[in-house]
Image (cartoon, rainbow, N blue to C red):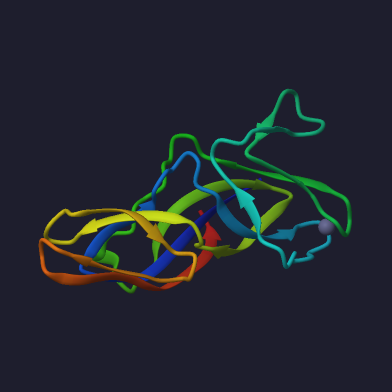
Length: 163
Ligand SMILES: [Zn+2]
């Protein structure tokens, strides 16, 4: 079993605390690499904190994601750490990588992350809530009426490392 940490970096304009809008149901799209045959699967898979599936051969063991490699047919799985919540990306980290989440992997590794989905953030000085930051196009722009400033999220990148 290996614990992996997903780090993201982004360019935040006049906002802070970028985080998936609904942590328990947010669908993270990850790219999977099988540790048995080393195949990287081109299609991204959806993983969230709520889904639970039984792991074969385990004694009532469950994981958030159970997957069978299309090439070698081996089963592998991944599980979020229930105690470690997703960490919001703060303006302090602007333009630099910061940890978002950790996940335990058995038989697979995640090698890619597509940030599509609904995130949220708040105005940097104003605290204005932006609950629907759609990163489906990879970036988002809006306007903070209170600060009379444009706000935005762009240049989202990610990387995985051993936790
Ligand atoms: Zn495989």
